Amino acid sequence: MQRLRRRLRHAGHYTVYVVLRVFLCILQTTDLQSCDRICRLVAWILADLTRVRRSIIDENLNRVYPDLAPRQRRLLRKSMWHHLLLMLCEIAHAPRKIHRCTWLNHFRMRNKSMMVRSIIADHPTLLTTGHFGNFEIAGYAMGVFGIPAATVARPLDNPIADAYLTQFRCSGGQVIFPKDGSAHLIQEHLERRGNLAILADQFAGSKGVWIEFFGHPTSCHKAVALFVLSAGATMSVTYNRRLGRPLRFELGCIDVCSPNVAGRQSTPPHLQSVESLTEWYNAQLEASIRLAPEQYWWLHRRWREVPASALRRLQRRREQNRTIQSPSDAPPPVDRSAA
Image (cartoon, rainbow, N blue to C red; front, top):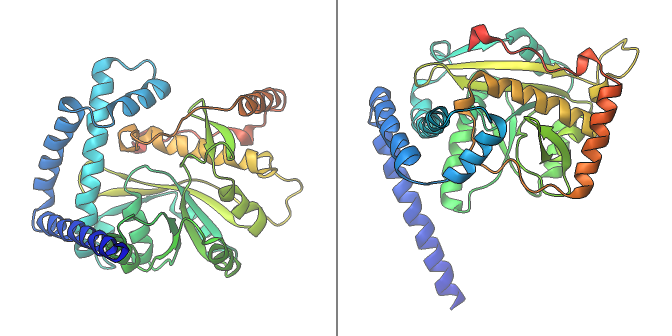
């Protein structure tokens, strides 16, 4: 009986994989302009005619942008769906269109020298980003640029589809570490002074570090800050947002912090603890999302129920921050001219 169940499960996984491959083949044979028009139509259906994740999206938007009019919220919801659908089309087209001879046609860089210096420095680098812009293309592009990096990602439930997605992710030179059970691999990679890319805006549960994201409490994984503080790694908060048309991006760096600064007289406030560093990089993620709010994944549950102990701890930190306010703690100004 168990053998039959395994075979049925494998057949189900293989069927899903075949459907996925056929779907991607259709996308690859459709020009990007047509894909864009189709994505806008499907986004309108998902945003206005169905209730797919609508309650979560609207709840998140009301929390972060309480002054939005209903029409503005509806437009932002539709733009988000368009962005997500277009991401799939861009991923399907990227291997054929983005390579070492053509990448300049698809990317412009913001704060390039800051990001490159942190990556090529003689110590490990943590490339921190969130579910914003086309982060999958950003990982692929790093390999195209000749900058090898490892990425922490959760495997898909379908192992056949996951192997295919991993093949795409690694085709540019990335190395993929599974989210669970890879602590020793990550540690070895950082000890070799490698670059590690990680999505840092995932809810971490009651045992995570509770900070404020867009002014509301949420839980973050402690490991992100620990990688920096324990391994002496540089943290570079990056993003890859779309500019006007498919496969045209701004790959940018919001800010960089590092424990490895020669001649430093004292430790900056944001490097003094896991909590302070977690607050710092979330402030930088906020700054990147404000550049193009429609390109953020408002459909995932970033904010959930907050334990009473976490609320008390956050209140104490607010009081401490009001008492000891340093200019270095403030997030960098948003470059409106680049938006």
